[in-house]
Length: 489
Ligand code: UTP
Image 1 (cartoon, rainbow, N blue to C red):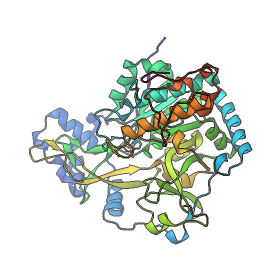
Image 2: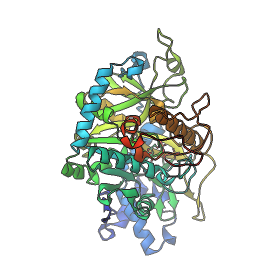
Image 3: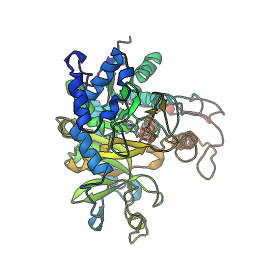
Image 4: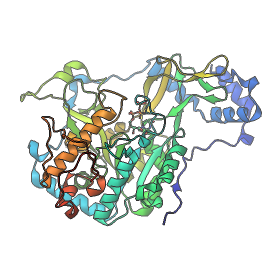
């Protein structure tokens, strides 16, 4: 029986208008040089005035001033000491020289943690997916070759499959933003939560940040609203705490959070081995790396900076370092970050509680702003700055952070762009390649080309296995035969 969805709201409530002193708010804004936000005031009705005033009352001027000074005007910008930057160590896969017995032990330990109900899945799905240009929450984007199953469905089926194997209900926390929250929840309701128990799918919204123009002035998206945008995937740490999600985890006995992004259907939503390494190392935040395919590949780099594990974004690493090779001719800074982490609940509570938190970054974006007539228009080129936090900025604060290698083909093929690299097309191809590999493991030889792409289009549901090992070990997959074109196994 389906129960009502458990919905957590971010506690950043709109302030009660009755308590607002609009004259005071207006004079504060004018003295801060931000009076332009009252540009349409005289044309607003009383509800609109209340809405805008409530937003304005929430803005933390000192934070905006500090961000404008550091990120836009460039004062006091800290410079990375690239001279002393070192590549971060990582645990290689057994096939790349890692200790196979350690990997096997990690899987056993991770499976125990899963069976004990210590692990929750966590998807950050609050982004706006502007590059894909899809109208709707990105998780509702169809990705699989035959069923056109959406990203959310693929994750749900992996969670169902792992839950069945470990005989446990694995809770799934999904972070939305105010922009896509309703649409996300409705999508799950319309699809009966893809077979999951509604109580075990927990939605909450992340915080929003006001955008500014290149002069640091707050901008209006519409006459009665600031241009607001989600505060980045790093906003997940404070949203997990503020929404009550971590308290809910505690109640359920969950102390390990399997963090992944909404746009990667290959991701091992549940990865016992990764859980096991996290537990064995007593790590507060663990990460997966893939060796970068080429120096300019757009993934962050795991490095050691001031003795701390630090991700340096691809755009920030000087090209001479990105291209440097080690004695074996491999890229020296090869450990690429693919935004997959195991995070301890305690660590989230420490990092996401209080006023502190992660640093903000600047993202120059096309921001829809109200023109002189009050009509919201999106420009063709970036016209302002959004402020975002990045989850990997928590790593330097984590105790015993560990990085393990993963097989790109089994964990990473994001849908970022409408076409070309990291697009629905590359993702579909990578799913097909995965199906063929997994079938080969159980004795079914699907003819493939030199890139491992099968000669036919078919599909396998994640209900048969949430990862390669669980697929191979599932007795139901014994006796499978060569799939027909268009067949769903
Ligand atoms: P991206 O960096 O790819 O951003 O997010 P995006 O907003 O989805 O897409 P573009 O850049 O506009 O094309 C990586 C992951 O972080 C989540 C996204 O939903 C995605 O899973 N994210 C990003 C959030 O949850 N909140 C944010 O504020 C930003």
